[in-house]
Length: 164
Image (cartoon, rainbow, N blue to C red; front, top):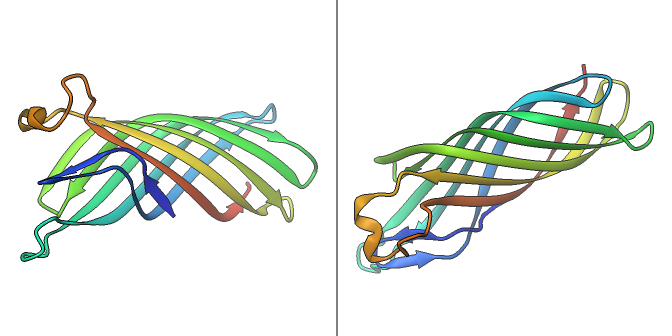
């Protein structure tokens, strides 16, 4: 699950938050001291209902992030480890398949892993992603003059881990 925690401006309506689904992939290389680098990719999708009940307008929103990250992993015990990451990369959003905008994204992640063996484990991560896009010309009528144009998401991810 993932939550859009920033405002989303649709015609005739402003949404303050919205839940959706997210898929994520990350690869990390960590040296023995616990520091390393990685690459993260995620795709978030949600659907907003429009205000016009006669046309049943829907806004299909997809948010994408791809970027490198700096990683810190720390062993708590032989079976448990804590991980954090911070990344800066490319972000884009697509609305209804016909409007796409690209910008800059920032990703923060913290999680914990349980290691079944030397190579396999499971983990849970909490991510915060923020994306900033070029401000469209026509948004001055419904956005504050100094308000940034972009999205912020919070998600919780669980998955399998493979350690090389």
